[in-house]
Image (cartoon, rainbow, N blue to C red; front, side):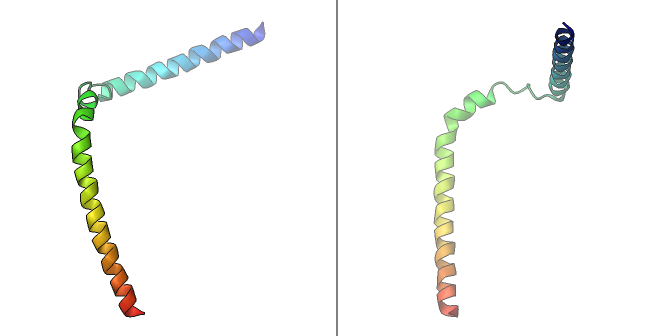
Length: 74
């Protein structure tokens, strides 16, 4: 029977901690933005593909230039 009192005390303490953390984050504005995660998925694919393609081209050029420099130095 003693373990039951301990378990109730632990569960109430844990619930109080989660409640305090939730209230602190709510006051900081953590849960204010409800719209952008739902809308972000609609515009993400084209912009990311263009950025990745641009990054790949620059990485290839840089790698190619580095290889030429290494070949000349050897």
